[in-house]
Image (cartoon, rainbow, N blue to C red; front, top):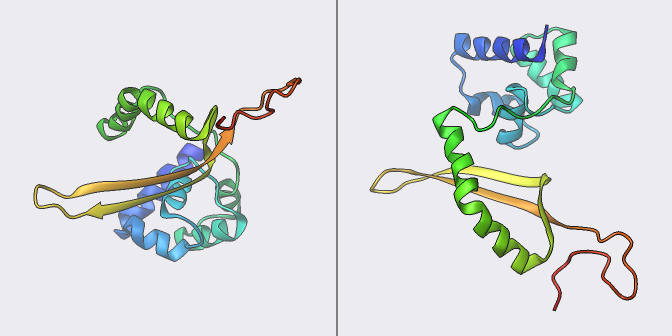
Length: 160
């Protein structure tokens, strides 16, 4: 079985049992819903205790349980063709240069980590139509200026 086939098996079981992602995440627990769903969709790994909970919930074999604990090949073809995913891509294409400029002005020369990262997703009621609220928080990682000498800073932190 491939990881893609395991993902399809998990989705089939989810459909057959009429489970919501919320129900599944409550049963597995232990970390963010985004990470649990991402793992079940093949984009993240579950740590061993959570892989065991998922395996028990879905009735998986020992081999399938171990697959949930393996580091996956992450990502999808770019740009994405799914309209919802494409809108995120569009957000980055249109707003990315401004985000980059504002982050660099505030923090210096570096990046926002997508590994040391938190994200929450909430529904925000609105009379004009409910809104999706995404909150992202990533550690700032300054670039290292290797070989720096003569008082040149080693890291790309914001200069006064």
